Length: 277
Image (cartoon, rainbow, N blue to C red; front, side, top):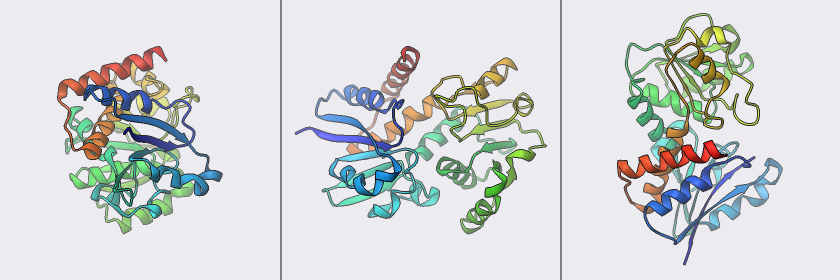
């Protein structure tokens, strides 16, 4: 019997998840799993979300990473801290556990890129579900982080930081970024396909940094990363993080482990998919 998995979100017309999970299935030499996209608009969500629980497990992307929480049985620690779910583990078709594999993937990336050093002055752009995950990750390893948000949402986010006791986190208005940051992380969708000519912050701020990490992977070079490249600033997109969070999904669903060679194979495959897309 084929086990069925999928991705819940909207819109999903440019999602790479089916390609990614299919290659991960193939690396374990199995044809017993399928992965599909479930693009459900906001006005249809409450009518159709239950279809997802008929699967054997599913991933979640915007705009449902928090909206799905009330319908779950429980949350893992990573999901509880970030208040964001990107993976649902289904046990015996009646227990639904929410996880956040983004935190695992993000932590692996910042360690690899050397962004887990105490002396770094880091700016995070955006404080949605992914931004909250990043903030909780930085706080958990005692790193300071400044988050740039819209002026209208400052008070709301201050309340979140206070309630969750994120002591290493500070907020500023995205319109009033005055100091220099040696590391910039973008956790907003600004610059993603199809609005590829947008950039979340001015070029003048970007070119004063030493490293830029844009969690967007489509396009592979956002406007933000193009500015970094023009200034010869080291930079990374979000493709490696995408692969790592999918790897973690499979480890949770199937209780398996991927070798570094298999992870590298999946990453190179996805680079080709993006290049040919």
